[in-house]
Image (tube, rainbow, N blue to C red; front, side):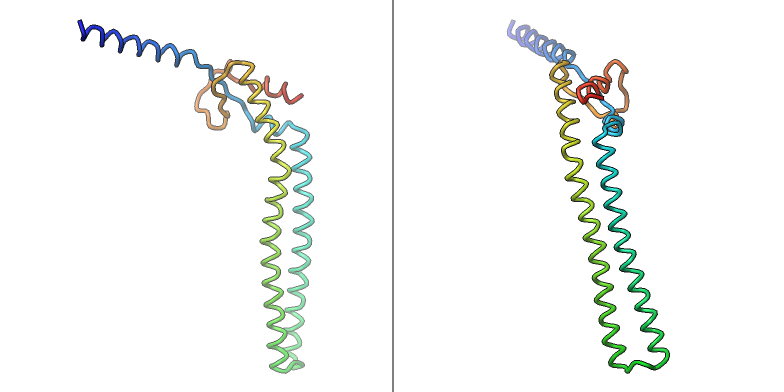
Length: 168
């Protein structure tokens, strides 16, 4: 009798676990497509592109001036118009400028990354809030991104609802 009760209890627990698992509701969303449609995302990308072009132009000007100065130094040294000490001093100055150019490039990359994070964070936050609202309203326990989804029924795609929440 004791074994029968244990077996019955296990059967009830398995049935309850199966019923709970089947009651969960899953959905997925194509966040990449939604982000691409957002006007704020297009504006942020445009802003970042303009900033990148401006910084690249400044960097290119620095490199061109550096190359011109190197050529001028080589020309003067080739003509014998500089003493060895002057050549060494000018060479040190050029090495310092070359280091500055490298530091500028690193700063440029960091500045762009920081600006990207600054501009995109509120956009990502709004999309995540819309997804959360759709999940809560629709009774979804999980909403996955389509990019990592191997299979999903079209009826589980909540992208349209998220677009609606975002006013798209």
